[in-house]
Image (cartoon, rainbow, N blue to C red; front, side):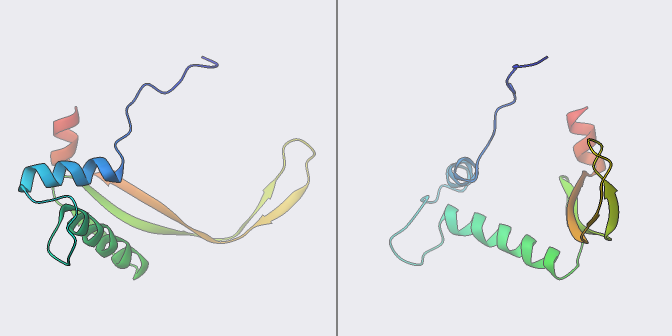
Length: 106
């Protein structure tokens, strides 16, 4: 339907940080280099990204398997005018739920 807005709520990083803070009973931010919810979430995300960039597959148990897929360059066609262009090689972020996650959401 045209004009219908997405009704699925979005959870942002700040929301995850707040939830981690509440679960672990630690401050969201601290004035010094102590362990905080923000630091924990940033470390986890940075570690995942670093491993993906190294070419590793990241398996987050009970959640998802995440990896980057190399897409080779290919020739594509503009359907409006039929012109052909070369689409450069790139990486595609892919994630698929693990079996426990599939069981929880279905």
